[in-house]
Amino acid sequence: MAALALDAIRSDASISVRTYEAIRAAITATNIYEIEPTQLRLDERELAARLGVSRTPVREALVRLEHEELVVSVPRRGYSIARKSKAELLEIIVVWAALESMAARLVALTASDGAIASLREIFATFEGGRIAAHLDEYSDANLRFHQRIIELSGCETLRRTADGILIHVRSIRHRTIAENDRFEKSIVDHMHIIEALEARDAELAERLVRDHALALAAHVDANDNDL
Amino acid sequence: MAALALDAIRSDASISVRTYEAIRAAITATNIYEIEPTQLRLDERELAARLGVSRTPVREALVRLEHEELVVSVPRRGYSIARKSKAELLEIIVVWAALESMAARLVALTASDGAIASLREIFATFEGGRIAAHLDEYSDANLRFHQRIIELSGCETLRRTADGILIHVRSIRHRTIAENDRFEKSIVDHMHIIEALEARDAELAERLVRDHALALAAHVDANDNDL
DNA sequence: GCTTGGTATATTGTATGCCAAGAACGAGAA
DNA sequence: TTCTCGTTCTTGGCATACAATATACCAAGC
Image (cartoon, rainbow over all chains, first blue to last red; front, top):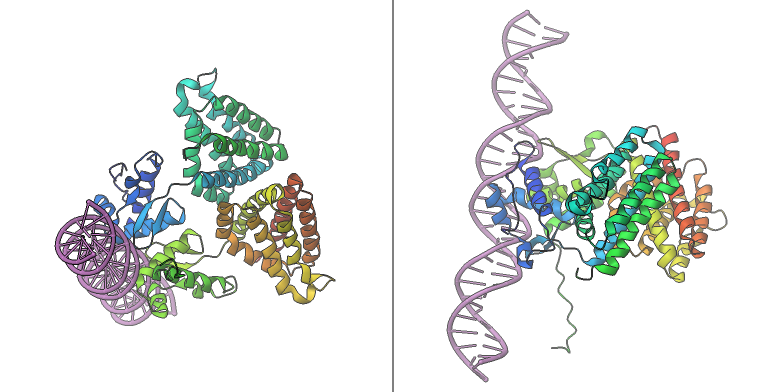
C-alpha cells in the first residue's frame, strides 16, 4: 500500500468524486506492473483513513474504478488493483486502434488547419535526433500526440471512451518506447499521419493510425513475454 | 471426493449487483424517450423500498449506472435517467461505427467459416419480403447482427466497450428502422457485409460496416429532429 | 510431524441514522 | 395580485453500527 502516492483530495466536488480522483491518480502514478502483488490489495479502511473520509465514499470510488477496470473486486475479499494480462493488453490496443483511427478520419474531415498544425508542435522539441536522450519526455509527447488526435475529432463520446482505456495504453507505450529503436519508426509514422491529415486524406489517415497502433500490438505480442 | 460431481455453490451475486441489474433492466425495458420528464427521476429511498433493500446497494447501483451513462446525477439533487441529446446520439453511433468496423476487420481475418455463416441465419426468417410485417422482430435481428459481428471478433474488450453503449444504439435503431423503407437498404447492406466477410476481404468489410453505421448517423441527423 | 477441525480476528457487505443543501410552499408587504 | 423572504420538507451525502464471511492461527489427534 505504501507504494501508492496518495495526494490529499481537492475541496470542490463531492467527497465521493474526490476520493475517486485521488485513488485513480494514485494508481495512475504507480507502475502497477512493477510492484509486489501484495501491494495491489486495496484496503477500504486504510484508504478511508489515509484520505480522511469514511468507508462509504471509498466504496463508491472503488465501484467507479471497477467499472473502468482499474480495480477488480472479488466478492467478500475486497478490491485490488487490476493488472491486465498480455492478451488483455493486446485487446486494449485493438480497441484503441479502432477509436483513434475513427478519430483520425474525423480530424481529416472536420478539424481546422490550425488544429492539425498543433500536432506538429508536440514533437517540435525533439528535432535533430535528441530523442534518445529524452526518452521519458518523448514517451509523454508520443502519448499526447495520440490523445490529441482523439481530442481534435471533436467527438466527446469518443474521447471519454478512449479515456477509459488510456491508462493501460499509457503503461504499454511507456514500456515499449525504449525498446530497440522503436522510436525511430514511431516518429516517422507520426509525421506520415500528420501529412495525411494535412492533405485531408481521411482514408489514408485512418489506415495509418490504425496500422501504427496495430504495429504496437504486434510488437508487444512478439516481445513482451513477461506480462 | 472426486466421485462427487459438486458444482460450486451459486455465489448468488451480491445485493448491490442484483440491485444494479434490476434497475438496469427496468431502464432498458422502458422507452426512456417517450415518458414524462418527471418519470425520469430516481428516488433512492423509493427504489430501495420497492426492491426491498437498503439505500446503500441502491447507491452503488446508481454509481455503476452513472458510469455507463444510463443515469446522471446532479450533486445534491439526485439521480435521473439519462436522455441523450441528438448530438450525443450521433456521437454514440460514431463510436459504435469505430468499434464494429474494427470487429469486422478481425472477423474477416480470424473467424471461422461457420461463424461467418451464422450471420446469415439471423435473417433467415425474413426472406421473401416479410420484413414489413414483422418489423419488431426484424429490428431485433438487425441489432443482433451487429452485436454478433462484434462477438465474432473474439475481442472481449471490444465487446464490453460496445456493450456499454449498446442500449443507446438499440433505441436509435429501433426507432429509425421503421422510417421510410430504411430496412430495404439495410438488409442489402447486411448481405454485402456478409459477402465481404466470406471473401475474407478485411478492408472492404471494415469499410462497409463503417459506412453502414455512419449512414444511420446521417439519417438520424437529417430526420430525427424531435430528439 | 502432518493433517484437520475449531476459533479468533480481520475485512467486506448492508443497513440505518444524522446532517446539510435545495426546493416547495406559504405568509406578508408593496 | 405579485414579489420576496422565511420556514419546512424533501432528498441526497456521509458516517457509523451491525452482520456475514474469509483467513489465519492454534490445538488436538493420527
